[in-house]
Image (cartoon, rainbow, N blue to C red; front, side, top):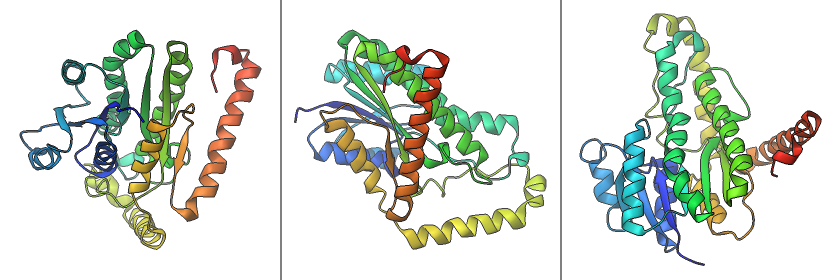
Length: 282
């Protein structure tokens, strides 16, 4: 196994941190992208420095993404893999969210990956190789009540990933998504509820019951978030063409996998019916 240079965004905690640490243990050169390294993420940066390298990266800022990519290339000479993990969740009834709040949800989960990949793609195209991994969610395939903004952002990330996969294949660059089920990470602790408490209150009973159901089921099914990091490591180190990947606890895995397969098969049939199959890679 050759050593690879990997950028992982949103690496201060959760899937991002687990992935960055797992790759570093495997001997890869890992750059952990964190925003506000001198402030809110100073402790995480201090803990990560040593086993890997920390780079300042705010995915909501194109200049920050450009600087981070330039710094990595200047330091390591290249980038082989980007793991777009940075994300957040805005749970609640759609009516209670303003358009500005929705914009913030998409700014991180969708436009963040767009900015980082835009920064790195000229370098990868010059090298005629590279791998883009987006950390998605089963919410991008199945929308439940009170997760509309988050699900919409992850569905958008699904579409971007597939478009990159088709468009970048001629340049030797792969693009895949890891659709993760709900695992016990701190994403819920950092959730942003609607600021409009009056409209949120209209749905309080249903939203509370929904939240309790999710928490109870998560406690029952368990699941190790390290499974997501392991899946990313496997994708990066495999010699085979990387597939779209579903990661879920045992009880959710089979139905999620079936849904993913059905989606891919339907896309192929629709592409053929539209006459654009020659432009689509599998």
